[in-house]
Image 1 (cartoon, rainbow, N blue to C red):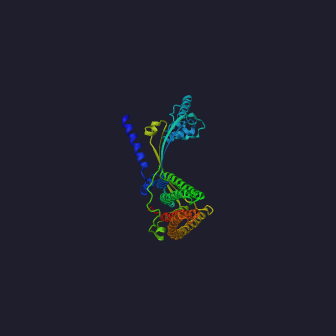
Image 2 (image 1 turned 120 degrees about the vertical axis):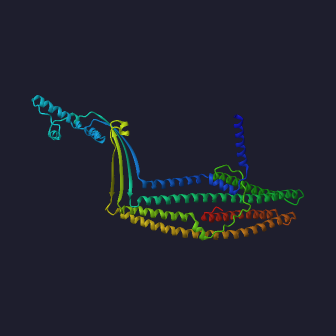
Image 3 (image 1 turned 45 degrees about the vertical axis):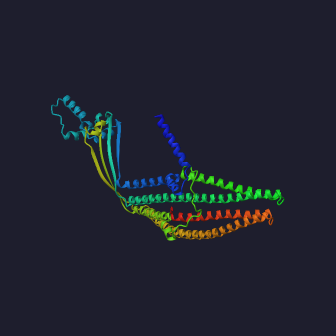
Length: 477
């Protein structure tokens, strides 16, 4: 058993190490994101909660059934007599008739009257006019009371209030579904952006390393020229100063690279140490038009779903104009013994069936004011939907214009970088021939570095705009 456990632990550690060391591709990262990201998990749970709200609202159609178990003990005359009536166990004795008969018999015996005691209904009439108090009725012994009661309350007609609430909850459930899709879209957007930012960083690091190699060669060349008297020490200091600046830039980029890995680990909710960056650091423009974006945009769909919610709320407000009708069915058993109260060995159960209708005819115009308010809010939401459509359309046009502008800048900067590289190499050769100073070479190299950084910034900005366009379309390409 111990060997088997040790083998399992070793395999687990090996698989974790192997997984951590494997480079993560963008498609695989998107799969992990959808299953592991904490914000997406929360959005999924919110959607499940909303579905339960729908079930809760729909359950009102079927009313409710309550089981009530009452247990009491009392020697109060009213309670004891009521307990017996409810248990169907009341007798004449409870009214004191046995005491009355005893007194009548005593009177008859003392008076020598041999007439039979009247025990007919006339006796009850006489007893009712009798002012004597009887202990059986006024001072009863205490009595236990066990009552089992089942009651079903069912709404028959509620002025469409329940069905309107169900419609509202369905719309809210759909809203949570859209919010989940929006969260997924936003996280995919951030993930793609991070992958392409990493590609730009690695491309810039590669170019700066080439420049650093050139500076190292220039440093060696300058040392040789100083040894033969063709260069001065200040030339070497200039080269080393430029070398230090490039090394600082490289260090900053490596730190940004580490920060990106931390952010990717946060997005995927697991350790990420290596990724496969896109071969092209420039994101291709998706084949989508403005009409497709407006039709598929989640924010617009959310606004349209909000419109359904407002319509449902208007119907709820209108329900006050209708009567409310409900059914009430009740069945109960009672006894002074708990077991008998359940099995009814000591008596029969009883039932009550009734219906109730309530109709608010006037409440100072409050209901009508609520209806008018709901109508205005519905009109406001309709206007907001129109505004959302026009706003998305304007945003699409703006982003596309910005992408075209960035594309032109990238083409121009790539040509400028190519020229800066050629000029630097030309000045490096001319410096060896003593035709230009080291300061001239350093200046041209600074221009070369500046173009590399400018190109990185523009490409990054262009990628962000493309991802923003995809985000508006809520695509995950």
